[in-house]
Image: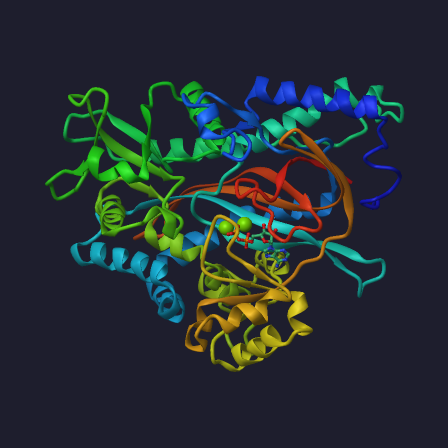
Length: 516
Ligand code: ADP
Ligand code: MG
Ligand code: MG
């Protein structure tokens, strides 16, 4: 296997070459929608009062070298992961146990669970459930083998609002474009055709998942046309990522009406029909006589406490959950994506005991074995024996250096790293430590690249995180799986001095793979 740092890659650039490459990327990005709305620090609101400004998404100047073996590993286990998480979400008793373990110190999780219980009381009317998932990995180098082996280790599994499928496709296209137009002309050229650039098909893959759910929705009885809703945050900056998915669906399924609805507007523009089926009805704000029956509600919002400032917001989530719309995701599927579930799944049990994984999927198949290999060490922070051990490590100023402490949150910016863990834990009552999990840090082999962010180039060591998308449509009551696909990839890269890697949260940038 070629080394990730073999030769000079990316090649050294003369100043004029760097300027030229940057100009090409700036134009291509806006020309093709590899873009985001600007943060106020870059373009203040009063400089753009009509909200027309868009800027380049942060992106690497070159595709990063990524081990093919890890890329293939992530892709090959995705369908098994889809099945696993569909199965977890169907196991209410298991999810209840997980919730019980974390909710004392976590009102958000408690409220989600309450929403599920409220709907359960009157009974769910929609058995179908849609997951647009993304499993995230970093490369782990196992130095104990000779030669050292590389493995994809899972960072986390996302079951709600997994983003960047749209921008990932355009990033891989940008790098393909540069590989034919720019890189071969550098002083130290990269010859055309020497990079192995897998194209991300996430837009098509995710779109196909939503379309599968739409077509599985039983035909409407109320006489309204059916539609798909993208549930979004009102102040979303990553809007073009979502729009690419909408544009794709408008092309592949032009007859499916598709609308964007802000989370804060759910109760204003939707209602639940007073029928046994409880159809979700959407009244078009610009033309209120037009009413649609919502077949699929795809949530790009509602994943964190920020979207639930008051009881009204929780009532809105409850309204969606009790309706007949196919939810992507349901509350149970959202809860299946918590870090606590990941920890419990990844925790080995005594050899005499059945594995937790075996509760959900056949655990003696080669694919289950492959999936197991993607797990890394994650520990509970509860009062079990393993939890007390983990607590000791977490508060020890030296041992804590190898760990990240995670709450049950999504969207980046929530974790506590290394030396900050002991101090942080002092601020949390000890009876609430069980709401966190402690995860071993994955330290990928060094890779270098250049990042273009807000018009400036940053150069140096970077850390790459691969995301593999998956789509799954299943029947929550019977367990039948109607659609299960691997759905494209994402590569995000951050400077190796930064702990967090979220692009939207401002830490990372978009990238694509050149496989080595
Ligand atoms: P979120 O759901 O907020 O995205 P993640 O678990 O993905 O939470 O953590 C956010 C970021 O923190 C990741 O993108 C990655 O850069 C870093 N990170 C998380 N877990 C690990 C780990 N075990 N090893 C190294 N980095 C990690
Ligand atoms: Mg993440
Ligand atoms: Mg996440």
